Length: 312
Ligand SMILES: Nc1ncnc2c1ncn2[C@@H]1O[C@H](COP(=O)(O)OP(=O)(O)O)[C@@H](O)[C@H]1O
Ligand SMILES: [Mg+2]
Image (cartoon, rainbow, N blue to C red; front, side):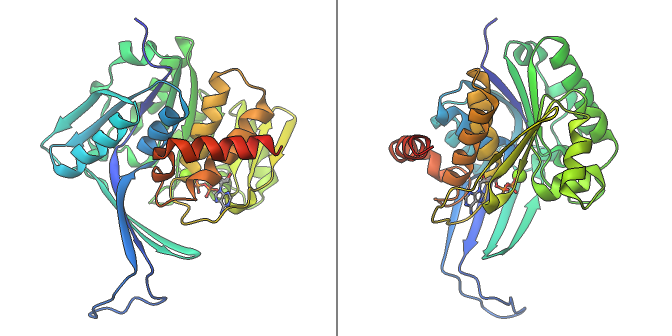
């Protein structure tokens, strides 16, 4: 069976992003804000959406509720070309929702997990996963039911010859469990941001953190926000300087970075090219609201990539 290029196992939920909040939020007061955007959010879905927009064939295994938010999120993915035939619906919980208070330089992210906590091992169609070339999982710490089996999923994918990638994102409990280190042994490309790299490696020193993580996964791509990104493979290192953009918000920049990297990786591009492309994708995502809005405008996406690749 020939499936998608990339199978994403993960969560699908919308983001509600609030802009133009006052510096201080006073309780029991009516607080007026400048604007909001309800859009497709969640790390896994943003990755899938944007990777598909870039031209890679993506399929998703996920679980949503039978509510309008789940429907809206699923439609956005489908419009982008993602195969959503392996997304199931449950009435046990509503679809999750993330509310982001986009304070400049001080962002608050409030997540109701909903169906994220419901996706479990029995929901995974392994024939479908194995029909793809690459497995990606995002939001390790938000998959409460699946988490004990994530290592097994990656082990099997690797044994079947798939390449694999993982983006943990934040751990809401700030515990960064040991089980993650076991999973990293089956991960080809690990995508932490700077803070996550340090937390997972258990050190405040970034070089030391990268050193430790590179002992576990062959490729470690560390996202450095407005400072660009860094890639390590064995003893080789590459650095991508930041691209100057008028940034609206950084929601989903990391997931867009991951999508850019995997797009070129599966095309067999050199490591440095994968990093450059990822850095452009991350920067591009910040030019529009949320994590996926930029990638819905195919014309401006094509122009942005052409301009920034040309300038190298
Ligand atoms: N303000 C910015 N200007 C240019 N590029 C950015 C900016 N913010 C993020 N990026 C790009 O997006 C990538 C991911 O962003 P980052 O915020 O580090 O990830 P995460 O969303 O996982 O925290 C960065 O490595 C960089 O390539
Ligand atoms: Mg991230």
